[in-house]
Image (cartoon, rainbow, N blue to C red; front, top):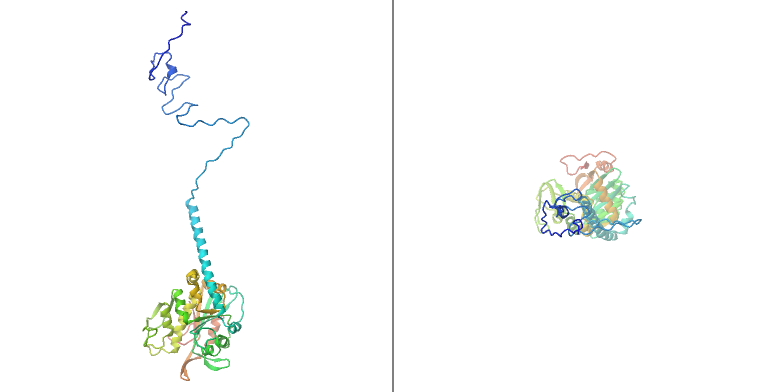
Length: 400
């Protein structure tokens, strides 16, 4: 057989060992350790040649058929809120809880105010002068403190405060009328103004105030001292400025009380004692100075009733806030009054006064002409003029 047609012997290569002088070495290049040629380059370790895949790698998808579009499915992303979105979600949750909290407080407060409206004597409601919207027009509200159990009680009024809201001027004005002021009561002659409440209840007192000041009373809030302590405790106490040190000379409510001079904060029990104690170690203390203490407590209480903080605590104080009250004001109107107090940039505090006298064995205050000017200050018609320093009974007004 010719040499050209004779088959070459079969060669076995073990372990990839090929002699370099072997002409067929290029066909047995193993994993990059072989010999590179022009048509078979050596692939570096860890790499694969084009068209090849690593062991364990899934095969590539088959090419699409001609003329057919393949829909691509985007990879599923896990929801991971960023810190900004997390803050917004947290703030939103707080707002929802806050609104729900106010709603619960409003429901509690509204239910009790409905009961307070039902306690109002129809004659008292008829004696009031109708007015417009409390958020749009000035309103005068009589805040009356008494130890009575209702508008028809024969007990005398312990404190008389007129409160005026003026939305147009963002001003809250308060006028205290001493209960011992000697005035003319329609149908009963001249006597202390608080006797009007004993003679004819709130309707006669409203008529007397109108005759004395020329003011029309639009609303009324009666505070029953039987629930006075609970009301003040529910508000977190009242803060006032005590002009002189007070020490009781006889026990009141089973305790001897001492109230230092200066700014003091009183809880319900202490506020009631401060308002009601008659016998003190100060010989100058009379029913007139006792009335002054009651006025201070009622003024502070009036501020607290319409404060914004009271609105925020309605869920916890809503029921106790309205229990000692009798009023014609609805829950919305009381909240509107609170809003006006919050918006008010200033508060004008006025008090009527007079000359101390003893008539018929009673300490009274004879009204003075300056009281008419105080009413004008209260209405904002003239600039406020403070009372004379060192005087307990001179009328005047000051902005706080």
